[in-house]
Length: 580
Image (cartoon, rainbow, N blue to C red):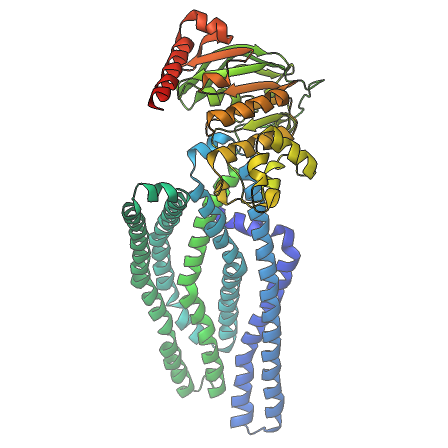
């Protein structure tokens, strides 16, 4: 019920439309409630009493009620659809904005397919309830009590007869809701699992095909699909156990009313017109009873869908701006790590990291896979938050700076390049959407992306596929480097940015990057010694700690881990030469 109250609360900005919609629906219901009274007059005054002059007026009254009901119903549908679609728009945009503000750890722990399921299926379930569910509940409730009042007015004996069936129907409805609620939750969870499976398989379709695993993935999908089928069949079984009982109990009312009415007419306590009028209210009383299962079904679906949507909305980001952020006097790329540690859940990833990068210097970070290299540079822009110690950029702790301003001054080239399904021009100027073509070309030239772009059919207007499909790994990386250079940052982070290019292209990129890196503080994560040997400072990480630090020559002189990496790469290059 808490979820349902929150759903209804979403209509507050559109309460004018909602009030009008309910007003029109009340007119529809009132017109239905009046109709049996007119029918009663037709029987008693026209058919039995013979007052034919009343017939035309009564028929015109019935026709007028039909027109009022049709026009009011049309306006009600229009208003509630507008209100529900507006709420869906607000929810969708608000949820997307909220998801963007959540920290990276949220996405480390939640799968994209599940999130997409919440933004589509669950959100649409909430909208459906706002458009029809609430109105249906209001309509059936008002119809039931209105018909009951009119029936009591016409014949309290008949009304009491029908009321005897209500406790049993209510008990069956309560049992139905208790059984079907948990199953609907399982259905939503399993739907999210299925969506995740489909999303992952389609995103990794090239890997699936490369390893000839289509049959295996098909079997895994069928397994998840069978689970969803079993849950839906379980809902069908529950439905068949309870719904026919509720419908049967409600349909018993008709013979009960006719029996009691016939007895009252025989006793002279009711006229035929009143019996006809009373029977006109039977449908209005029994229809809400028959609809009870659908109302419960809709409420359960809506509350189940809303739970996950509201869960995401209520989930606050673990990384937030301070109330009064501080801004450095000058952004020049002065970086200090002061005894910084970082834990991911209970795992210690970085331990007591301290170093300083002066403006314009290049700091290289090396180490084995899992040593914490990428995590370290992500602390700069508060993608992750340091568990202990301080990260200072231009003299101010990054925790005290506004994240948007901080991140706008850090150009980041990720290890796994992501490009959007847009033109190369739009991808390169993603960080500066107002940048003209001339600046985009300069950035592409500095990243050695211009040669392959000029060979494209539409050059900079060439649209790349999803995640950059259609470009080679090296082409994607060079595009990402151009994207980072275009924002003209004081700090540049290259996270293994040339791993997907050959050594010749890497050399050309480095030649251009040396000019682009002048005046910027640059962090270079790399596995190739050739990418870091000119760095002002090289940090070698081992199990989250700085094992060695110094220049290329200083570290070679230590004959430690860095020297061993140097030897291994020399041996590898020599081996390739022998093979050649």
